[in-house]
Length: 248
Image (cartoon, helix red, strand yellow):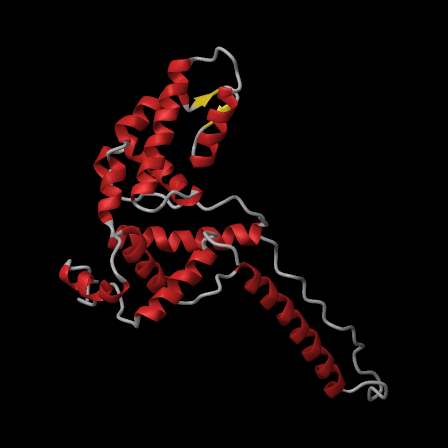
């Protein structure tokens, strides 16, 4: 996966995880119950040779330690317990994927340090990516007018400058589109995704159930916008592709 794809995918997951906070806080309350298991494993997460800080580093550490004969079995068991607890949580809420599991691991780390915030997301750490700089703008060269500028005129100079600017603008737009998410209504789509996938609600009853559960914003608007089931299904399918859950 290249850097721009990783960035797009994580940002799409960020929308989903914010929607979990809004639509399915019970999933966060359930995650907070894993803090004691995390605390059992925490003393072994920072040792010479590795530092466990998210889901992928947890899996890598376990895989490495399993390949060392005679390693501390009790220590390894605590890491396995944490991994299995996180996987069970992910499967229960239909979030058994590296991005939400990494987010869950990071929040457990913070909740273990600040118990008063347990169940409330405190971090949304994105991937380490190398974002390229904007392409340089290269204006055409031109000479200042001398003796009436017989060989040049301002209209010709302006034309060259505009062409150079339009070309540079196209390069900037191409770079932006490479890193930008393809859908502009992701907040709405992410809420539908969470209501259907995490809470298990029917596409036909999303708005009605949200209203019954009091899922409204500060102005009293229902958080799940009403739409035809086919439109919601299409939005969820598109988001699945952006999240990397199905191939493009």
